[in-house]
Length: 118
Image 1 (cartoon, rainbow, N blue to C red):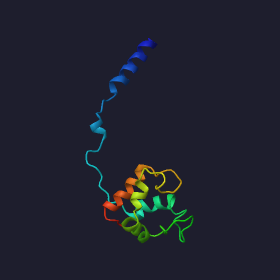
Image 2: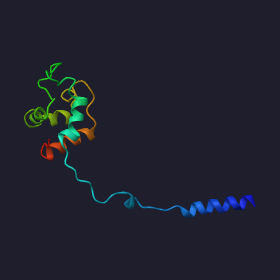
Image 3: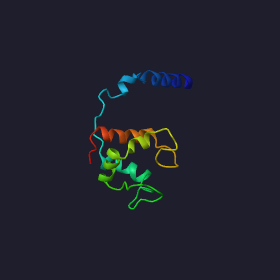
Image 4: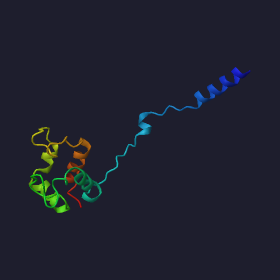
């Protein structure tokens, strides 16, 4: 009798499972959000760059990256994206450290694409 009850419970559990497809689990409409300096980029810069690119810059850094305008200037005129994006360890920023994770680089690139919004 005990075996039959367990068998029935087990069978009910198996039959109650659903088989959702991957398409059901993924939102078909991507969320389009403009990347902004304040919401997305500032924390990346603060956590990875300002230990040298502070105000005033230290460790031979040529400029500060503390403010929004300084970061815009670095993107537009100082090849900031090329420096964080390169695979050349002698040229990559942060200097002497590991290259930033690609997802963080992608956010900075998207910020430029979206128009360097504050």
